[in-house]
Amino acid sequence: MGSGLFDLEKHFSFYGAYHSNPINIFLHMLFVWPILFSSLLLMYFTPSLFNLPQFGFSPLGFNVNLVLNIGFFLTVLSSSFYIAFDKKAGILAAFLCFFCWVSSSYLAVQLGFSLAWKVVLATQLFCWAGQFIGHGFFEKRAPALLDNLFQAFLMAPFFVLLEALQMFCGYEPYPGFHAKVQAKVEAEIKEWRKTKNQKKIS
Image (cartoon, rainbow, N blue to C red; front, top):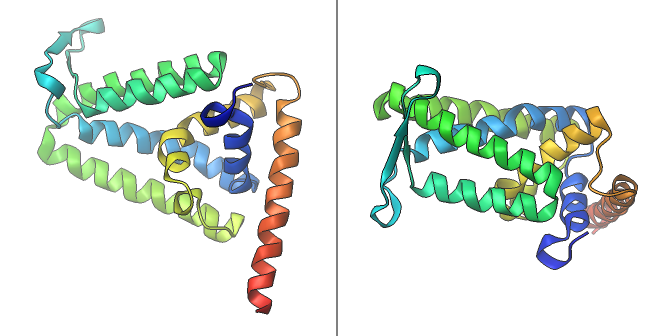
């Protein structure tokens, strides 16, 4: 079940309190992973860490040149966190992260920096706008990034995947997880609304 930093119930219920509206949840499912992918696409152009070598290979005839740079480091870091939180869903998330890293590396080579940064900028603006619309018009609550950057950037891809697995496959990291998280989410939202109303009165 984890504890402290790896308390999945605690982190997921915090995230869930900012994403309880079905439309907002759907928008995040659409946009969070493209944000990750486009970020890795831009990070491809950062220098290799500690003079580490580049790796090239050609799966199915596609030439891919992998650079062990900050994009690779963040992929390893986030994948490690996801697996530590939950092995089954974490391994799937790690696979998707590495797929994004490899495929974004391939796309970066094809586009070149002069075009890649424009693609990344357009993608980021579109996806972030979609998420802010989800929060502003449907959730009616500011996004979690204003309160917890760790949640917003590192954990969001894993949480939207976990939501999708639960929604479409009924997956739970362990029996009773969803019910416990839902109870905490409802309690947190109730407390937030109470605090919000008190601020209006004062």
